[in-house]
Amino acid sequence: MLKPTQISVWLIASISAFFVSCEQDSHDSLQQQGKLTVNLSLPDQVKTEGRSSGNVTPASILISVEGTTNLTLEKISLYPFEDTYVSEAIALLEGSYELTDFLVLNDPDEVIYATPKSGSEFASVIDVPLPLGFEVSGNSVTKIEPEVLSTLDTSPDKYGYSTFGLNVVETFLVAAIGNGDLVETDLQIWSGGSKLTTDALNPSTNRLAIPSGYDEYTLIIEKQGYARYKKTFSLAQMKAFNDEPLIIHLKPALTITLFSPFDEYNDLKIILFEAGTLYIDYSDYQPADTIEFEAMEWIDIPCPSTDDHYFVSITGDVDKIQSLDNDYNQSTRGINLDHAINLKSLLISAVMDNITFKAGSKIERLFLFGGKINTIDISNIVHQLVLLDISEENGTSSKMISKMLYESLQVNPRFGGSLYLYFNASASDEDKKYMGLIEQEFQWFVSFD
Image (cartoon, rainbow, N blue to C red; front, side, top):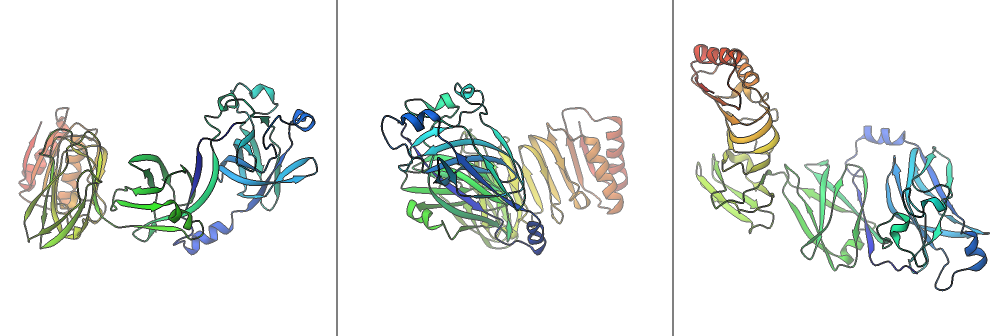
């Protein structure tokens, strides 16, 4: 008999139960639920001959379904009914589904039967291998009856499974809330210095699998715009969240993802416009810092040099930050400035897909150089810029930037500013036209390649 070598615990991230608006409640009430039940008939040879040893009486099933509602290796009890077994009913939103995993367990939670998956060695033995499609209608019961084969003295790969060590033993609830709103984020689960899993949490119900057998579990969330969350729980504590959810409140923060395997020159230079305190979390790469600032004081915050990306979050008097500088060797790989509401000067050397600035941002001086940013969107700050210095290998043309800046100056004149634009391609005649107008009409210093 195949004995599971690993037991799995389920994480149910029940997000939508918190801070749900009346509009959402109304929408949810329109979603009809149906029910799914599973009938299990054992193979004929098992009924007549039995199995040579061990507990062969089905007690429960593990199923995975994909569709309007997703289930991953959900454990469901079985009940004998005449010559078959019937599962307890499972509530699902109406829609189209596929059954992707089906395993039968005995009372000791050993896998005794399985439905082969399409493409596996045993798939041709049954009429309908997995995935098995079915429909769920509102206020009705859908019944399915997957075919199963004995797993006695056979390996999981013959059925299309990587392992039969998939038994469910516990469930627990968690909700992630950021700035009063439900958020989408990634949740990392660690134990003993090893990452067990990373899964996406959506603002809906999530089921995440993690292996059991560990004394402690460390939950980590790193989401741009929020302070890094890290907390360790014992297995007993995790079980306590089976009925009452763990609610994770994410604190607003200035966040930056760094990558610098080079030397000690990777640092953050920060100015506050008045005295204040910042708390710096370096994601375990070095001890967290508490830094006291005097008014208008430059502080260099050394950052570790590693060959891995790491997440730095800054909390405290973030709204007093006036200037942020991280210009070393393309070390910035992600940044969120939403909570640095009084930031006026930003200098970074970055490799990112895009950089945008939210409406209401007060940035007046922007330096982006020596990096690779595919899209630079300055539409929400262009009306107030007095210095723009971009030297990038990126997909944003100098024409787009110079034209946007010129048009903003016509609406909101600023005289005596500075514009530096250096891209891979030389400036076109149209680029030069707008730059010339900026220089002539508004007396800006203009330099370009």
